[in-house]
Structures are given as C-alpha cells and as structure tokens.
Length: 205
Image 1 (cartoon, rainbow, N blue to C red):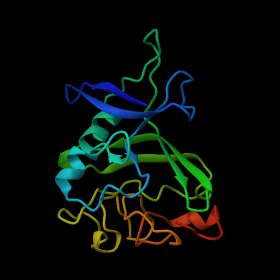
Image 2 (image 1 turned 60 degrees about the vertical axis):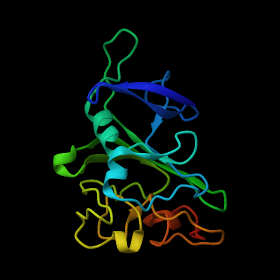
Image 3 (image 1 turned 90 degrees about the vertical axis):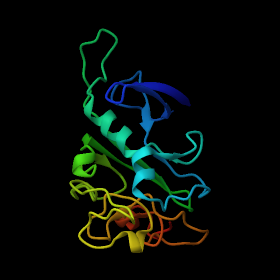
C-alpha cells in the first residue's frame, strides 16, 4: 500500500508504495518501491530534473526520484523496535514478462551517491537471484545515472534506450526504457535486462 515516510536527510515526508507481499530482511517490514512499471501509461523518457525529483503516480507507475533514493540509502535508520538493529539498505528487482514468467535479483549494501557525483550507484552487491546467473556481477553497479539531457555514460546510451538509467556499455540493463508492446522480445529498444533469456528461453519482454 501507500504510506508516508519521514526522510530526515531531506527533512520532509514523502509518500511511497510499500510492497508487503515479499519478505524483507526483517520479518515485520516490507520493501519501499523506488520504481514501478505496470502498463506503460507513464512516459519514462524524461530529462534529468524529472529523474532527480521523481514522477508518476505512487499508486500506479512511478519513479521515486534520485534525491529520495540517495537519502534513503544514506540515512541508515532502519532499526528494530528497541532501536538496536540497523539493516543496511538492500535492493530487490522483481521481473514479470508477457509470458507470465517471473524472477528476481536481490542486492545487499545498495547505496547511491549524491547530486555532486551525479547519483552514481556506488554499491549494489548481488546477494541472491533467479534473474541472472549467480556468478555474474551487477549490471548496474558503479555507474553514473544518465538521461538524454545529462549524459554520463561512456557513449550516448540514451539514444538507444530512451530513458534515464545507470547505463553500462549500452547493452546490459535499462528498467526505465519504453514499455514493451505485446509480442516484443527483450531488447535494448524497451525495458531491458541482458540475461533474461537465462530465465525464459523465449526471451519475451
């Protein structure tokens, strides 16, 4: 559901979608959704400032915003009810393709730098996954965030991917790409995860 949370680094409340269906590290908490794609009704091909601030509808498709991701992954205030247990920020990516095949990739020590470092994804260590081979490193870790009007990738990845992302080599992942149409294959022209064919041999988007 949708809940207000206090982000002390930004000194404000913001509404987020919390997924309580997937078990988190602590048994009494869920996951804060930083991005959600449902049906393609929200255009994710946006400029830098939109990706910094966030956009969309928290009850449907949305991007929480880079400034919020930075604050959430750097405040270290996930504690238990007696205030003595700190959980390092984690990231979980859940996938469902048009064939109904699902998979996930979960990372520990998830951390994003601030605006001065272009919101670089400085830590995302693969912990467990069904969406990629277990011995493959993260396809997004250590990359700077890029958009069509503020590119920090080694090449113009946004011209192929059409969305803001932590691009690496323009060929590994972009979960903010165009929403695929019925019958589309997993490819850099839409929402993309390089190793999806290890999950579904049809490589369906």
